Length: 415
Image (cartoon, rainbow, N blue to C red):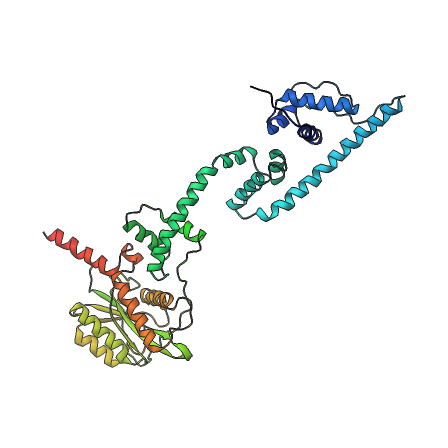
């Protein structure tokens, strides 16, 4: 193999690096520079000879003895050469902390947190390896040199992962957009898997964070429960168990405000089925009279073809505790159940449902606009909720699909 032709500047830099690195060996410095140890030693000795600095031959792999003091000489020129060598050595020692400060100052903008901190340090070393030696950069930034080279070797694989993440992000945005911006990573993952894409939920969450794709966050809830002190006591038959073995056995209900422009509002009463979380009845009005909750329960009876034998659970709102509503429940064959007064956890599933509705229809705004727009928006959301929106309690199936699969499984067992 032909000998490399090193420039005088490269040789001078190599010698200065060796001379200015405490405890350095020819072997370590030569490895950093990619040259032969004997070649570096020859350059160092030749430079010392040029400067008139004498040194005893060092054992292999050990640093040569430094000339710490000058020797007396009758020759004035020799004395000057010795002093110049000593000055050069001191200047080299002073340059090292200055170089370290310069490296740290430039590296500050690269630093992040956690794993990003390590990766950004590696990136800084790679970006500045032409200006400083790799060993010095790694020492100053306190990273392992072998780890840096391992990171460097994986650059192509990281680039491939970034390309794959960008493609996945495009698919996530499509699913996220179709959900109206409501889906978080669990529902997005379920939607992607249904299309045949094998993807890990943690990866979806990571890509969504990296590309700033987020679901709509919760807003502060408004208290609508106003108990009627004269209402008869109704037992809690749910005991915070919001599950059911079959559709049509257990229902829950609640009322929530729908804010409009100008400080006005509409009221929404809903009746979800505990089995699938399907909303089988709802009613929207500009009041909170008993008719509001009664109309929602009547719609539920029409949707299910009757509610005879079912249990209906609510909070202690005056509408649910009224004699008129109790009479309607008796007429429909419904057994009433109520949680404790002022305890939202006793009707948590319905509270959570209303929170999702507001979060995904308001989308960060303060109101739904006018009454007509509000009714249309909530109607669209409720119907889509039943037919398409994935629910975590259903294994990320929509309520309608969850009930369909349940009925299909029963028919298969019956056959």
